Amino acid sequence: MKVRAFSLVAGALALGLTAWSCGGDSSTPPTAPSPSPSPNPNPAPATVTITITNAGVSPSAVDVAVGGTVTFMNNASDAHDMDSNPHPVHTDCPALNVGNLRPGEARASQALTTARSCGFHDHNNPGTGSLMGTITIR
Image 1: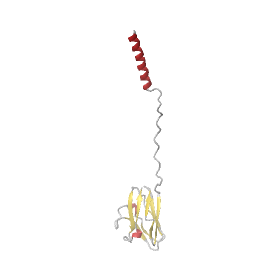
Image 2: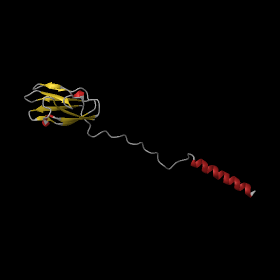
Image 3: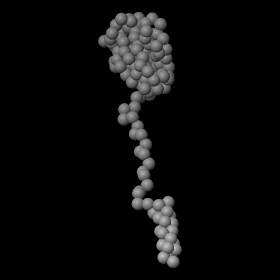
Image 4: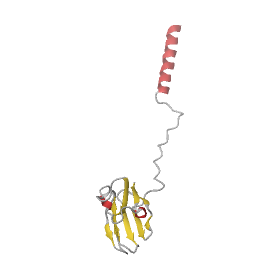
């Protein structure tokens, strides 16, 4: 009788432990969801203006968002033909090829749809460093 009573007690204890370990009240709190990524603190603007003066282009290095545009504004006393590198074929970023700008004229590029860096220059003055620059599309 003692063996049978011991077996019943051991079985009941085992059953209770199994029930407790398989979904009973848990003391571990549920994990919080991961925080969502924070936005870029310095997003690139959708439009940028580069001004051409008698001293050169300003700014000479800009960032623009993918899908954005760059406007070249000619405030110089001479015409300037603004195009992407390399000279003379202008094939690195054809969307930047705005062509000839008379004094006082402005023209926007086509949408810049690929993230990359593009150099630009004045086709009429390809060796003039002050009329060269870089546009980073990001």
